[in-house]
Structures are given as C-alpha cells and as structure tokens.
Image (cartoon, rainbow, N blue to C red; front, side, top):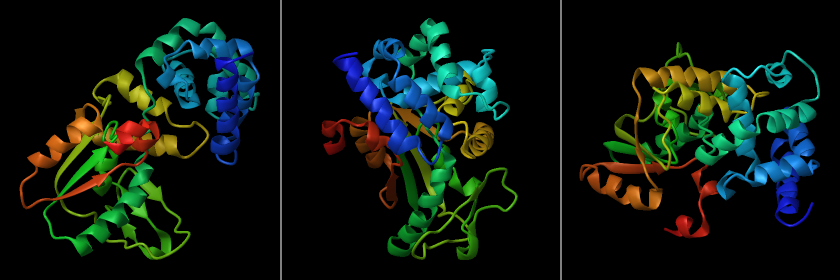
Length: 280
C-alpha cells in the first residue's frame, strides 16, 4: 500500500478503535479487516472523497443486504450466525463491486437516529423556561426529519421522569449519568418544525427508507427503534428542505412569524461540514 490507500487504512483503523470498539463489535471487526486489505481499500478509494469515511461503505454493504442480496454476512448482521464478519464483508465488497461503488457515488451517510431526541427534549424544556413562545424548531442536517418528531416518542429517563405518549410505538430508554435534566411530561408545543438537509430522505420512497436503515449499525438496539420511527413519520412526514445549511437556514429563519422563537438544533451535521461551512 502507499499514499492515499495508506491514509484510508489509517482512517478505518482509527474508526475501529475509537468509534466502534465497545459499542459495535461487528463493525470493529470489519474495520480491522478492511484496514489490512489493500485490494478492498483501493476499491473503496475509487468512491468520491466524501464517501471515504467508513460509515459510507458500511452502509452501502448493509443496503445491498437489506435489498435482498443473499450472502452469509446477512445472517451475521441479523444475529443468526457467529461467523467472522470481517472476511465476509470483504467478500461482499469484491463480488458486488459495481453495485457498491454506484451507491457510494450517489448516497451520503444519513444516520437519523430518533434516540437523539432524548437530548433535544430537555433542551426544549429549558428553552421554554427561558424564552416566550410560540416556538419554531429548525433541525440542520435533518435527513428524514425523525428528530423533528420527538413529541410522538416515549422518552423514559427513569427516576427523572418520562416525556411523551406512553403507548408510542417508539420507546426510548435513557440513562441519566449526571445532573438533573429538566424533564417535562410533554415536548415543547411547536408552532412549526422544519428540517434542512443536503440530500433529504424521502420516506415515501422504499429505497430511501432502506438507505436510512442501512446507516444504522446492525448490532445495536437502534435499528428497531429507527424502523418504528420511520413508520410513524410516514403517516405525517415533516417538512425537510434541500440544500446546504449556510444558504437555506437564513431564509427559513426569516420566514418564521415575527413573534416566533426560533430553536435551531443539529445533532451530528457539523461532523460533515468543512471548516468554511462551519464558520458560515
């Protein structure tokens, strides 16, 4: 290996050690295997630079499995086999090279985990204590807008209380590790909710919904709740506007009624912004 391929190996190794270790054993093992395979690294290097983060290829392979690819890796991801996922992942990359590269050329990582509402909820309660309403929620990097719909979920903070309808099909168990977050019985009443995303996910399109699920790590509890939140969102989808945040956000804020308190959230989008985009 050499040059850019070495850099890609370092990237996969870092993600395995610092992102997946201790949380996703499957992806930790896959990352180790990819980092040591020059052929697959060179294959992945042919994708656009913005698809070089490991999450893109991991999602691409999982998408192919969710789309019907019959491969032993699917049983591993489903918890039905304890085979080593590393060599199996490499085999999918090699045998499905064209389809994988086609996905990486057109798709971007869209991890839209509704569990992030566990943090947004107390923040909105705090806002209500500080500023008058009505309130307009704007989520930057909204993907399909699942985090705009936190009032439809049950957020259980244990002894600190719970927020939302008890019978919701999306149940999110939270552990408070410090402090005393302000937990209200209901989310802040919203006058409006608008998302912004470079490539919004259209949940009415089966391929888009499948890609959203593909971005979720398979050996965590997140997949089931994301699938349930997708079903809820499909009943009454939120508005998500396409485009970069630095150009779309000013227009969205200017379009809110004068008496509206704008609450702007972002859960992970800054991780994908360049330094110039962050400043803007």
